[in-house]
Image (tube, rainbow, N blue to C red; front, side, top):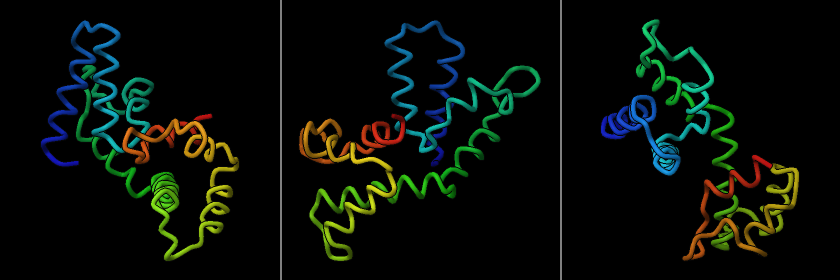
Length: 145
């Protein structure tokens, strides 16, 4: 994560902890943090653990960012990126490396369900207005059922 994004994350997290916010404001901050931070478990680290706090109750941002940055090397991250890569190839009809059927079969194996087809091709819940994949929506739908 670059310095500018780190500064923004620190600012937003400190707002969550130090200001009285409406539910809508909290939701907006969480949404922005979800966009800035790749690790989907970032909030668990600070809301459900004491591992990233100093003894005085302040957040150890160096330790938190180290943990967040480790996510890009994780198997979970690689798994999610592979799913998105395959779905985008399917949506873009890019069958230069694998046939359409190979991609579909691989996604079925990875996702253990065929619900993903409905999210993309039937009710199109995970496509934005331009028809592009909303990656976060898709991963949330297929992995957090």
